[in-house]
Structures are given as C-alpha cells and as structure tokens.
Image (tube, rainbow over all chains, first blue to last red; front, side, top):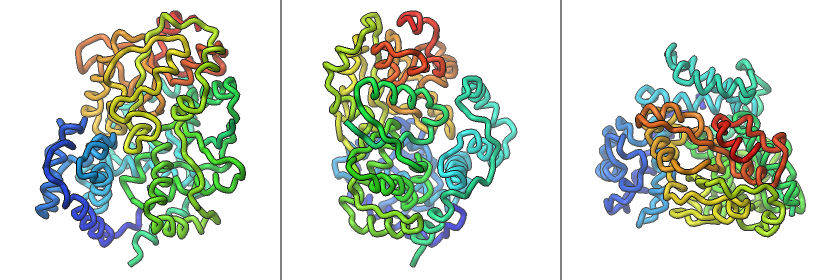
Length: 183
Length: 289
C-alpha cells in the first residue's frame, strides 16, 4: 500500500520488542529454522538484539527477509511466543523504512497485492510482469524463463497484459490503510 | 455432505489440476461443494509482509461472504496458504474480540459483516476425518500396489494450528494412500519447509531446501502434495536441484486428489496429469494413464 507512514512503523517496532521480552534465549527457534543457515543473525540472536534495543542492527539484517513462514519456531517456542508473526512484523517495518535493503522481497509482495487490489484475485502473469518492471533488472526474467515457458505451454498462465481492472478491492485497501494509521 | 468451497487464485491458474481433481474426486465420493460466489484473494504470504490488518481483512471478506449462505458451516479450502490465512481469522477473532470490531469497520465498505460462524477446513482435514476410508477402498478399482508414494504435507496445513494432524510428524495422508492401493514411502520430510516464496525472492536459499526434499524422496515413484506452492517448488525446480547437488533428480510430483482420482479410475479429464510439470512418462506408464 502506498499511503503507509513512518509513524505506524514506529508503533509496530515497539510492539515487536514487547513481544520478545519473555524470550529466554534457549535457541529452539534457531535449531528449528530451515533458513537459519543463510541468515546473518540466527533467530535467537535477532530476539536478543531486539531485547537490547539494537534496532538498527535488526533492521539492517537480512534474517527476517529469509523467513519462509514454516511456523516451526512458533510451534516449538517454550515461551509460546508468536515468532513467525514477529518475523512478518519485521518485514512490514523494513518495507516501510528501508525498502532498498531487500528490494526483491518488498517489491515481490507489493506487486502481488497491486494485482489483487486491481482485480480481486491475483493474476499470476500480470503480477510477475509488474515485479520484473519494478526490479529494473533486465536479466531477472531469464531466471524464471524456463519455468514460465513450461507453465505457458500447458496453458496454466492465461496471457493477460497488466490492466487497471475494475479496481475491485480499492475501497477495502483504502479503508484498511485508514484504520491502520488512525491515531 | 456439503461444504462451501474456496478455491483460491492459484487454483484458477498454475494449479488448475488441483481444482479439477479436487472437485472430481469429492464428487465421486458423494461430497457436494458450493463454490463461494465473488470470492477474492486471501492475501497469500504477501499481505502479512506488508500490513497486519490487511492480512486479516482480505480473508475476512471471504468468510463474511460465506456467512451469508445459510445452512452450511464448513468451508473447504485446498490451498494451504489460503487455508492458514482464513483459519487465522477464525482463531484470532475468537481470542481477540477487538480485532473483530476492527475487521467489521473495514468490511463495512463492502456491505459485509463478520460474526465468526464459519469453520475453515483444509481439503486434507476433510479427506482424512470426514470421508469413510471404506468408501475410497470400495471405489478404488485401479491396482496401484506398484506405486510407492512420498506424502508431503508442507507447513501451513500443519502449523501453527494443529487441527487434524501431528504438526511435527504428520501421518494423516498414510491411510488415504493405502486406501488408494499404493504404498507409503517412509521418510521424515513430510512436514519440512519447501522454501515457499524464497524460491522467487532468495533463489539459492530456496533451492537448497527443495534439493534436500527431492533427495530424500529418491526411491519413491511420486511425491504427493496438498499445496500449490509446495507443488510448484518441488516440480518446477528439479533441474536446478540436480545442478545444486550434482545428482540426477527426476520424480513425479502430483496433488493428493490426482492420486486418488487415478485409483478411482477417473478419466484424465478429471485428473489432468498432462498439466503437471513433472508427471513424467515413466510414472504415467507405471500407473497406465
């Protein structure tokens, strides 16, 4: 959504820090995370940084952008903390404050929702077209070419050019944004 | 038996065969599906990464439409990501009434009102708990005992809400595979993550997860899935997985209702194995379809 404000991001961050206060640093989350091997800070380390108020270190980390929402950490956390939701909340703050740090993640989700807002349902071909053009990397489409061709040859991706559509969910998106940024 | 039906966006596009085979198999088993009119996207994993309220409002809109239909209380959802987003609304408004108020403030613009009456059910939940296995056994006319099947559950139908299966060691597909006449490939990877959207946004990380799964499935004739994203990741990136581990990797990946449809002897127009990216000739020859 375009209208997001930094104010909402600050609120989100303090809510996130509150949620990890009860973390006892046992590391069950890190041991359960399928993507921890690729993270700069393990999930456990990330919660410690949040507890210590090291906001800058947290937000410039790429750990949360690698969360694939498998919910193993949430399931196993002995303190019952909603760790996967916290990863998502960090994605939200980062997308608002530092979108240039993980452009692929941020733009991928934004363009997906753009297609949903226009038509009510995502149009896979339109969404990927919007994503490619926003990423401004002429080589990126080639990464997906082989899979794309196999899907198109089976007529699984209806060929639809991006269009404004009926702006099907415009009102709902706008209303949600108003409610979320209400003082 | 009657359920409301929420197919979700993937089932209209890259996962058409999941939609077709789900409807055909449930019809053969005597289940009525009533597709929700005017359904819209559940938000996928995108909305949660952008806005917490939008992540609830998009699925809530569909639940509110479902509530306008009298006499049906359960909504069947084949896609695990849609299922979890819809389930999350059901669970959240039960625990936090304040969220329901906020959602209704948003839904007002669509002339809809949510109360929380609808129970969200995954396709696997319905198949494993509502359907009589004897019914499947008696209809399974095609002998499939030569097939060894690796059941793959993925994450979001199991976690964080353990509704119908063990979220650590899922087993709910085993009796279904056996009722279809096939054998179960013993492995411990059924509930391990496929990498989800990392395959698009952080490909090298995602590929390593897919590779680990495909290697463990060696020895099976096919992997069966219950999620369009798992399905696409496991069948669409086999070349890249083979490159990553320097081994030949090629295995058929199909949706659970496609396997059941084969067992029930349904025609290919009801199963559409031709739409799969990985239902290779060896597999199709083996089950004579």
